[in-house]
Image 1 (cartoon, helix red, strand yellow):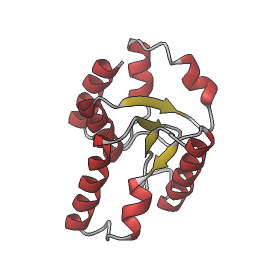
Image 2: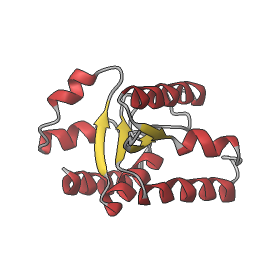
Image 3: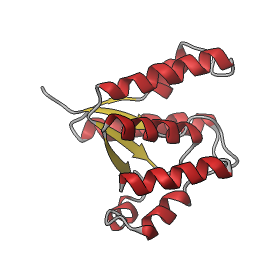
Image 4: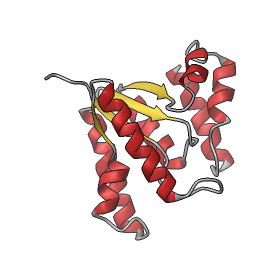
Length: 151
């Protein structure tokens, strides 16, 4: 019964190539993938967006803050990268790092690609940065620094 508590990180908002509905379906697949790993997953972006209005800044901030609070209890941050890495995911990865939570980079569609990149190096930093989209240069720089600390 003692399963690791896992926070699922995946994109939520639509991007230039993926709709929000596709991201929701993907996030649901990520949760199922985590369950099949014998984990107890939580995807705050699936849960809180059903309660709060994600288009209302105050609701969005509250949902993000509540989701980040879960990192105080989490064992693993499962970062699913098939649809890229969003700014919200960077916030979650940063909080995981601050709280000392294990960060596990995952792929549902291409696990063999990520497996090859488990030997973290400068090449891996480039690989992970290539998954970011729509992020400001400053956020990408912060993420690169974070990746180098984490790996």
